[in-house]
Length: 388
Image (cartoon, rainbow, N blue to C red; front, side):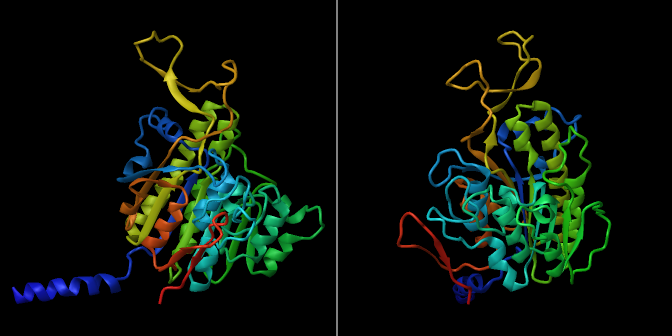
């Protein structure tokens, strides 16, 4: 009995000093991917089991921004990157337009490497929020400047024109090279061995990349694999954000086939992340979306009678204001969150989108022991203290 009491007395001390098992975090964002978009791959994937099925810990999150019930990608990614909700269009600034510290800014001085992959421009709303601060997502050239100044180690996407064909005439492409980036605009080889002492950037299109229907290759999968190959050599771990950007774009266009192909493409990249995490054992993988786009639905085909649902086809809900018009914008439906690896149990249940950031911080040793609110209730700016 004395031995048992002694062991029980040690448990709190052991738990307090125990280091987390999470060394790396991969956050994968299917922009515009609501539950229906995610579901589509289960019916249009040639009977192949999606990689989404490999997740066991699943939650749902509310995506509303600080001032709007329906978020945009900028406010959604600001919540992910900083742990704070802001207004639509904000790039990691609060509701008073003050800079918010991003997850990459938190980890860059700790030896933790970072990477960003997107099928949009790398200056687009979602990737931008992890390294930039801007009062509007439309300030792409200003956002490009912030990438040059940032601590990002690896990036891959489009947006070349915001670096070398700028209105201000500044050659930000050359500035990236001065900052130690090895750049490529023609070829991304997932098998290339990258030097961990260097930084790498791939700008593979003037703006966004081609859609899958337009013939885009396996860029998202290849870039994810290349990023993981490079980042895994970090002694202190890494953070990687991968965005399937164009699920959203096809939703805005009300292109059901396009949505399905983009989700299938995103699922391949998810598979690469899970394969890495399974072998590594210290990697947390999170798959979610910033919002749903288009009111996408999987409904009976027109030939089916009322109660004989023998077939389905991708369609869209009708707008309330005009039944003849389909709704082509974002919606406020709850968004699924899938998590795998150590710390994944934290992502079960219902919560807000900015909780993604806090759950990542809870799972890792990356910074936070104390969070207190700014006395200004409108700003709601979090102040983080170093772990001691």
